[in-house]
Amino acid sequence: MTDSHFSELSEDSVLALEGAGIAAFLQGQLTCDTRAAGPGTSVPGALCNAQGRVVADLRLLLPASDQGLLRVGSALAEHTAAVLGRYAMFSRIAVQPARDRWQPCALWGTAAAAALRDAAGTAPAGENACAAGDGWLAVCCDEAGTAFELYLSGDGGSALRERLEAAGTAAEADWRALELRRGLLRLGEGQAESQLPQALNYDRAGLVSFRKGCYTGQEVVARLHYRGRAKKRWGLWQGRLAAAAAPGGMLADTDGKPCAEVLRCVVDSTGTSWIAALARVEDSNRALAGAAGEALEPCVLPYPSNGD
Image (cartoon, rainbow, N blue to C red; front, side, top):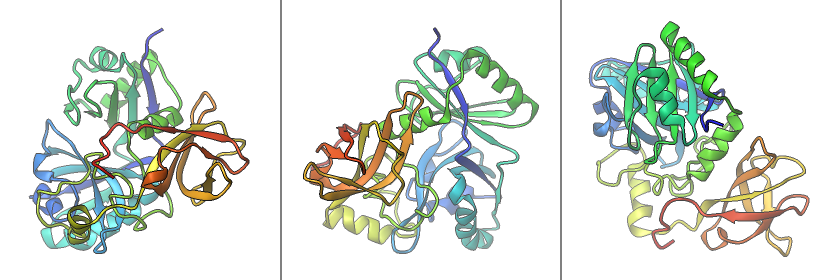
């Protein structure tokens, strides 16, 4: 059985940017170093408000200097476009929803790279590397080449989709669970402008550059990095819940005391629940319990703790 899984991503949307100097404009807005973005490289990052709170997590693709795409969560796309639009007008850059032109999809598994090469003739190699073709853009999301984000458009994108679906499909929830295991927490409805990047582990996951210079909210984010310590960060737990844990709900310790706030819960196709919850750093490796007392085991996230 070929280990290649394709899924449309209904929880993601795309914003299109048009105009000269997109990377320079975004350099003053996003947490990532947009100078690294180009036809062959994408950059993951976040948009913050002036208080350093995350408006949205995102990925920047820059297939041309005057054409850019931002992958954002569907629930936050309109708000993100409005926030960027306040500043983009001064740089003569247009920010428009583009979900009708670009369909976000995902491809993953040990045979994903081979499936993409067979279907498209090429595949990007190396984390954040990009490749493009007729009606499609592809981003490699890990060094192993087992996870790809795809953006499909027009007849060329539809033809590629058919070929990839023939190699194997899976539920979007399985991709979302994989994102969590890769250490990436995606924000959803009602979660904009509530957390600093450090609480979301964006500093550890490569979404924040501390060398790029100023951007909106940078002073707050940098102060915590250089002079403070995040007291709470999200951790990942897995188990089987009687009902999916809703964001804002609480997980409890073995004594029944609430100690972790649920930020996201994904139930994969096997029925396993993957719960991202905000907890004190010292509690992130402890077994916890769900609302009905279900046992939840902590998972190790794939980045260094940096002493926290």
